[in-house]
Amino acid sequence: MDLWNQLMGGFATAGTPVNLLWAFLGCVIGTAIGVLPGLGPAVTVAMLLPITSQVEPTASLIFFAGIYYGAMYGGSTTSILLNTPGETGTMVTALEGFKMAKSGRAGAALATAAIGSFVAGTIATVLVTLFAPIVADFAVTLGPPEYFLLMLLAFTTVSAVLGKSTLRGMTSLFIGLAMGLIGLDQITGQVRYTAGVPEFMDGIETVLVAVGLFAVGETLYMALYEGRSKQEINKLSSVHMTRREWKRSIPAWLRGTVIGFPFGTIPAGGSEIPTFLSYAVERKLSKHKEEFGTTGAIEGVAGPEAANNAAVTATLVPLLTLGIPTSVTAAILLSALQNYGIQAGPQLFTTSSTLVWALIASLYIGNVMLLVLNLPLVGLWVKLLKIPKPQLYAGILIFATVGVYGMRQSAFDLFLMLALGLMGVVMRRFDFPT
Image (cartoon, rainbow, N blue to C red):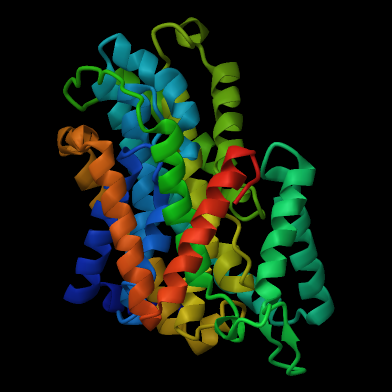
């Protein structure tokens, strides 16, 4: 009963006109970003962090969450119509979705992707609602040794899974840890790795690192190495499914949700592994194996899309209850919490319960918004692909520059942002995960 009351309180907060507006804006921007290949929610949230620093914390987190799961919805559009995944989590969708589009069934592929995302997102949100408070209660009993082991597990898993080799992953991890040590030690007062630069005394702002590596670095990389590719968009048919396609999609949605949710709670579990696993399961169980890789099997779109969205929603469990992000975007959301002086972890459900339950309630609201935005308006989102890439990249860099300068009005921050961006390009070029 207490859980129900807290959730209803969350709906009361998330349902205010201001917060509904922020949720809607997040869903719209997230869908648009998902449609545009190569950008992604991590880049977008990093870019908008400085600009939204003056926004009330609850509204800001609802906005960023909308961007996060909105991008998952939008990413399937380009996978199906262009064979170009808008997100890494929608790579598998392209395998069967593009084949369906080529055979004149793009509408059915887009419909099963959108509805599957809604079904999986809603079920996963229910699981977050039920299990997050339980995990938080358990986490209160953990002490420093247990948290040290959790962090060690997270670091080891991330470095082993991300990148093309464990060595590259470990190298990136130690670069990040070294950057985190720069500045004045808050306990001992010892100055560390400042190289005599006064601006480094307070350390490097997490927001600055996020904007430099992701917004600037990713944009420069795309402009340099991926900016000239062009592809023809498949013709879009009416977005609907037949009764037979519904019958084939529903079990795939449920299986995808079951596969995706656990992976979202694991450090570096991501959405790539569960989507590939879901695709393998659907291919094995399908009664229409001849459609896979030829005309396109609808189960090969339905299952992975459900797994993708379930995994994304599940990242909130370790993020809110343990303060451990299990994806890049979740790490930037953690930075957003820290910017407001809010410490993620087991005490969050006590100290900031209004924010937590409003965020969870916004997931239910956002899923409905995204279903409405993605089914009837898919033709509008496809038109975003006609935006010239030079103008798109220039706009991102302008947003990033204005946002970083607005934090402290410091020219040094701008030079540091550019340096971090160039470092991100070099790391990406040589397959070091950022």
